[in-house]
Length: 158
Image (cartoon, rainbow, N blue to C red; front, side, top):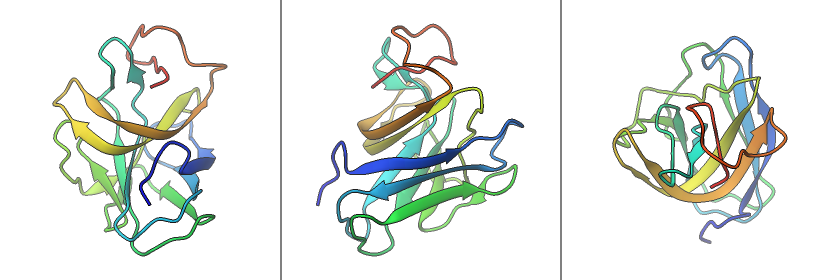
């Protein structure tokens, strides 16, 4: 089944207060069955309404289902050390400018406020644009998404 908005839901997030990937984690639940090879990209890059794209100075990790999975399956990503988790067939880091696979995977989540967006069908547009279809998003540390993009720390609703 093709993934659409509402196909997954975030169930947990852990952000540290020391910077980097150390201790950062997130969890989501599948709300629909997925086939082996199903791919979801996750970014902590804020969405910019001024160029209708995600910021590329953040991180992207890619999850690939290694087998057929049923709705209700819970999936967890953890970056256990300061340099991120080693890339594997299931989880890999992605270069936000080129889409190339990196040797480590991790999101640098801020305890003061951040977001994670789940994307499908991303396009990597150099240093100025990361696009894709958002299927889920979680925000913490702020009461709501700001109305306008004001700085590199701003994130908006896609």
